[in-house]
Length: 542
Figure 1 (cartoon, helix red, strand yellow):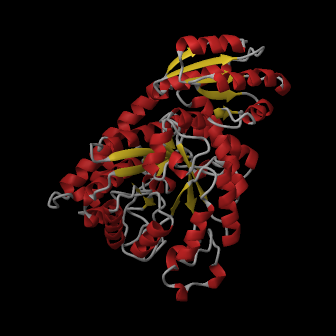
Figure 2: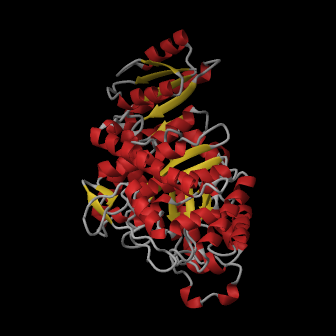
């Protein structure tokens, strides 16, 4: 496939056309660039000579001056037995003039994004329906990567306002996946509404009270770029909840915690063993139906000030269990800026170590997708400062070439995002993506980052080998609910914020050294290597 590009008439601005041709080359096209201020007659002559499939024209000057040029394009096209596909790029006023001709299959007006150009180059019509964007997460990624799919949480304490907001977000075409945020009553009592406390309606999200409510929310998204929809899992009646999501909103993927939402964090009363077993069965339920699975696990440990080794271990255990339970498409979430206090370089080393551990499990039957996000501890309540923080974190995230970016609204440190704030946050992220995508950053080659990453990998493997040896009577200790619960109860898997009592007897203390979160001895103030920490606990546990 051939693409010819030129800035036409008296326009000398070539960057737009040139960058479009660069994208096309990356997509496998053969491209020819004619340069600036090319007469339209020379373009026609080159078309006759080279026979391109597509011709990209650029014009960024006064709108009135493009009219004679486009009249010639129209007249020539009408006479041509085999006209090419026409593409146009210019400022919004000029692009609006071009759009009136009905000639152009793709128009870039400065308000579009690189992802739109990629979709066009891959054969998707700008005006097509849901199919052109992808009806599943995997399709969406395949159609856009290396441009990441964007996901954002949304749900306000009113069904009507949430429906209006979803319509607004969808029509803006800046978000690929809407993550519904139900209120806590819906998450816990959707199937037992007789015990709901009405005074808590709308607390934490949208008050969904029926399957029909889910269907209305889904229907509101059937416009614009037809965003996928997913929803946070229920905290009770989890299988009924999962089935309802699958049938009503075609849940794009599920997110299941492995160790949490139980007596450990106070979000429920279930014993850890029971909740882990239920989580494993829920993962298998989704795997059997071909639904992608995310285990939103590592960041929970970081948010509770676990030392950096623990989130790396948690990332591996989560992916290992997903694979063991039959998941084919696994969404691995990597929260940056977590825990609060970690430096950018040490945070990056931690993320790189997680990625290495998770992707070591990949094979023909197990594919992982990198989903990155900014950490909530990063954001300032001042919206202007938070916007800068969101951009800075997105820059770091782009270094690992994510498949999905979980956009965190810049306002989240103060309040849940409105539809307009969701759109604005996505635009900030898209602005960063536009100027970083395709770059070959080599931050990971920084000596301190590389050294810290290797240290974390070694320490994580010390932990995993310890568990395998300590529980060698179990045929697969890393996937055993009883073993996983026991390593939490005995404090091997621990975080500083976990309340210690007769059920959870760890003694982890953490601090920051040179920007990294490390375990340390509270009395001697010395940093503890993983082998030392585990040996002390083993002696304590007997």
